[in-house]
Figure (cartoon, rainbow, N blue to C red):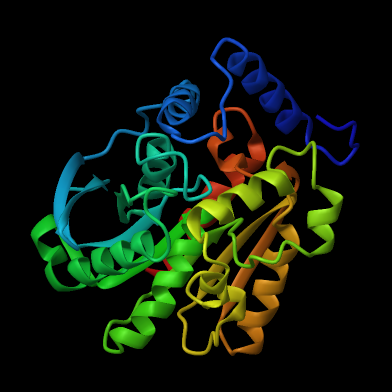
Length: 316
């Protein structure tokens, strides 16, 4: 961890705690196959699991999506129906994590906003490369828009969101649906420290290349897993900073200050506003990439989730 005076003390303490916990696990390797490293990653993240707040309903549901059964975690904070819904896509470089690792975050968004939250367990890379996960997520949105009433949801009040690679998939799916399903209108996009540009050439990539958790080397690995064909990265569905952003719904973008991705998030804010999209943004000082998982330890994470829930109440 760098000796950076900008680092939030609670963020530094949390990072040291997780590094100490990781020392008791086998080291995570980027060598394929990744299943053993995924198991370590999930076990470590599950040490942060919190079943609170309790929901009126928490259930695992299955959808037949593009020829495979896709698991979705549904949280409903109230029993009345129909509820607006946030479809939330977990982060992890398209490679790690699951609906289990992000379950506490989804619960807090549901409790704070009054929205139902669905977490789809999309196919991971490198086994599934672009655009498989993206097309799966667009198909989940289509199902909710067409049949969400079966789960006690309001199909006309859908927000799509995610963090890191999940934010990339959320924005990519919104762009895909704008093209393929013009009558399907999302209410908003909740984008937490997203991956929006494949070029890794911003000043924040240089400043935070090493020592701040998410490194430039790791991002290069993630892009090589998700879009191994360089030509695919030219697609606006893979790298949304390249997209025509006109016509997208209102967006909330949360940025971690000390993050290789911070500048491309600011560039996305500017690009969305130039395209006439309503955008609310906030940068959380002293935080690192992935800070939302630290809700029980870092005040900035709790404030970010509360702000997201407030935005959902106003938007969904």
